Length: 194
Image 1 (cartoon, rainbow, N blue to C red):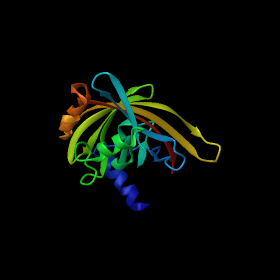
Image 2 (image 1 turned 180 degrees about the vertical axis):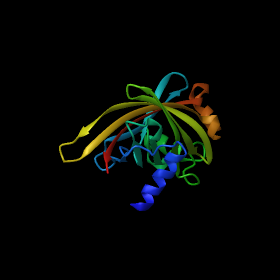
Image 3 (image 1 turned 120 degrees about the vertical axis):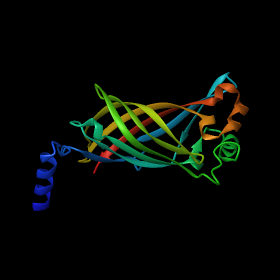
Image 4 (image 1 turned 90 degrees about the vertical axis):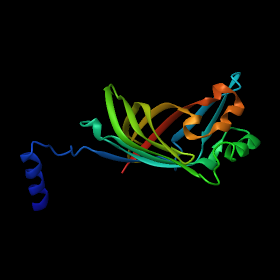
């Protein structure tokens, strides 16, 4: 307690303030399957190919008073890709696309959050995919939060972004036609407060 008091006094003497104590830590509700990562990509420019990554995990922090402290981390098992067609999924796992034998996971680690009010904001972070790390932004919207029927507390968000296959050296994506360069990503994440 004495160390904390000294630290607080030191920070305040430099005109700095301590982070609010209202920071909440959440784990994705993977067990209850209340979290989804989906993708949408054009097939030859004629239709949409829609799928999911079925296996992933992550956590996030939330601070209503200081949104700049909000953050998220997730790891995706790329072999869990599911486009509702087993042969296509096998091809997507191959060296032509995700090359899961060499790059089995994708990770996202946020670096900054900028609130625009009304539960909305821009989450910036580093996405590592196919051996390449790029800075991306996600448009984020809080869906809601509150007590659940099992005595816990939950909070949920959705997010979206557009990735470009060439940024991640997935050039074989052009097999699906030029419109397939852009992949729309949608996330719906419900977390359980720890």
